[in-house]
Length: 144
Image (tube, rainbow, N blue to C red; front, side, top):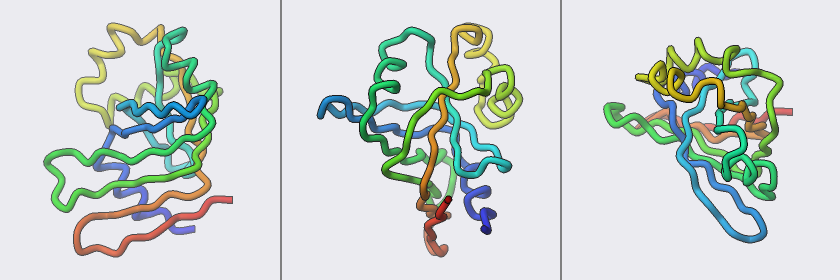
């Protein structure tokens, strides 16, 4: 599987609009995320333990997302997926902190304020639509 275009697009963004449906009520949240090349079918994000959002993640029956292109990116590259599953991750924020610090500007301030309170979640992807930007070939990456 060639994930080079996915890798390139995930380098251009660190936020997503995450859509959840719980009991036929839809909600959209903006969250920071990270992607690891050795687990291309998984995106990681965090939420404050015990917060209302954490309960929504546990109860979500339908999940989709679209990444939010950084404002300085020409062509608005993005990724999106539907029918995503959310689960608690075995990874900790300490495991993911280097990646967050590398890809999310000013994340150190977030970490200093609430780092120990954060719980990691995984978005498991069956497929992901990758749009590398205007005028470039789009593709859907399938995962087993």
